Image (cartoon, rainbow, N blue to C red; front, side, top):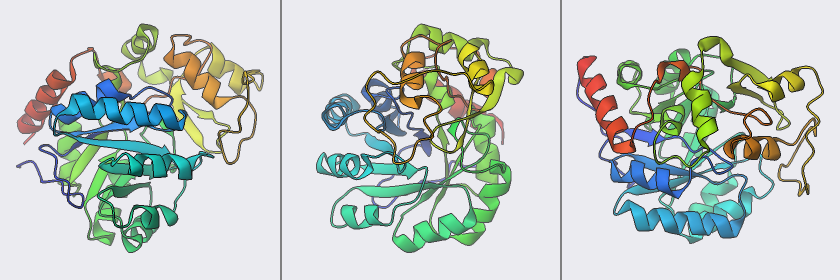
Length: 317
């Protein structure tokens, strides 16, 4: 089975592999640029940073990526959603991925520009709405994904349903960590895959070593579903902080709350929890992760990760 061509509007990456956008400074310019240089689509996590930092990250990624494709991921649930989108479009970003809610306005904002808009969906109904709104593709995300989850259904169920429903390309996301997983998704009808967890364990990912070591040491039973102030469940690694969340005693207040979310339960500060973990305080924060993290055993350069995925894909035929 040959690799499919992934065409997202006017964008066609060399390989149908998208690096999932991980917010609060987990996927930044060095990682996104390395993925773009390797022939995939590199994605900056734009939620949880201010507008000036987003501009800087996009410009840094552009400088490092050559002619590679660079995108950003922006949560609809973020209070600054519109400002972040307009900033990315003004910076002539290639593609915006958006989830945790659905925006019709974003397609109007991008009209007449070269920025493609790709919603992250978890149902055939949402995929149809995205196609009707003008999306050139959708990312179909299943329950196996890390971070905030929009469904309790497996990607193996969701992808065939969405592929049968829309005419635009469908990118599979959720629990995909190697070439065998990629081959399975392509056989189900996907035109490409999105991987986030695999790229955390890359040399170019800008998180603390303690964060990466939690990934490397993770067993299947360490991956749990947690309650998030965003109002959606999340998938993360069990640690001291998660145990306090489960007991209702997380007690993590923001240093200076700026109402970063449109709606927040205020059970604890998710922004501070994610920042703590990213900076290495892994027992005092949330370490988001995909379901199959335990399959990954090495930290490698992005270029080598691509070589491995493509070799595994070829061997899976």
